[in-house]
Length: 570
Image (cartoon, rainbow, N blue to C red; front, side, top):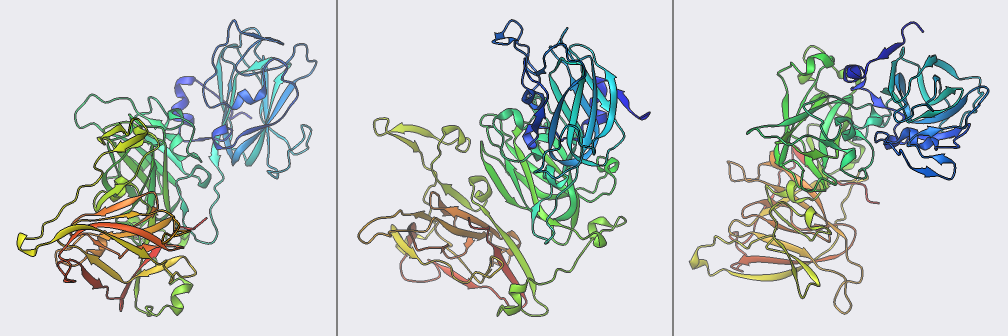
């Protein structure tokens, strides 16, 4: 026990800032059992927010405290058992007696155990191991202790001698990561996968580690938020160490609850390093998401660039100029440890085996290159390079910045003005006219067992933009049970006047969303999922069936195939 250290408060960052608070309710920490909680309940120990003073407030049993407080005159000790939010190796504790003065617990000790998560250990279980011996505490103070790294544990027992109050109890350590064994994609940055925030430029209003927590949180307080910048060109940033090196696919950036203080935009870089200390000084960061606009109070999904056959261990998110982000999810596949190289990490390459579904695919060949494009939820920001998204919003503050919104129809409606404008560049001699057509689309059938579908055709409308708006259910000639989702697949035009397939992006739209394809944007013909769907189409056309109205291109699938990876359908 000689390696136990008492950590001054001003050394917290260098000691615990890269650790995970394993006991936090934000990741599922909970009170299992307690010897006594007569004056104040033990659940207060695990609250995320600091303890507040309730001086002068009284309840049926006496003065109120934001913490755990037991009866007086205990002849031995009181105890509380905490189940950690996830298993991990513990390196330290914070036993906080804030606001307890004269009734604080005078001494404490701590024990740990690893057991079946569904079976709560008893207070006298023989497996408990003491990691902090009986130690003096003081009033109204934070007492931080660093201990020798423990074996994996998932339950902690705090004992106080003989009785009294503790405001907060925090357990710090490193997560015992949980990764899928089947090689499927998962969130490599998630706290349960072992993801950690190594460095942040600023965390004035919310700490960077919140970015990796499960769920979407409850308010702005459980995200990462920086202070307002006053310097032109300012940026803030956070460096995330992934739970395992991996091949990255896409990212989710969630600005939930940040409605007037979300970042204007963000960009992502990645690198591989087996030394955390070198990450900040290394200059070989690779851009994996160029600077991209963000919106308020929503989940953004972006396909990553420069990630093919490249292993990354760290991701850096830079926000412009400042603001708040709730969560970051970095989706990818864990790299086989045998493929990792510490000498040339950015050149790590593996040859993936074709999925089983390709063995019987008519497009497959022994030399074919297969590119898999993730189908991501449609958002205005993600689709902005290709067109616009048409939809309503439950809260005005969730609409894209700059949107004009007014009350309408005698205050019975909200009007989201001009979400898209009609454009046409036909020459006057073409006599093109604008109209509304209806497409009754039958659902996609050729979906592989692995949830993928081959992309074989793209089309474009060189002289007009094109808007599609889903139509609802109806009697008579209407659809009784229409589809609720459809695909939106797009690509920019290349220098050879053909689709630049490096820019290929795929989105999943709901029937609450319409889309407008910009003039000249290549896109897959309208493709609906699961059921039939009617879509109203607003476009300008000559109407003679010529390529001026619609140019169709069949992709060459003899040596290279593009597959769309559909999300699992609940």
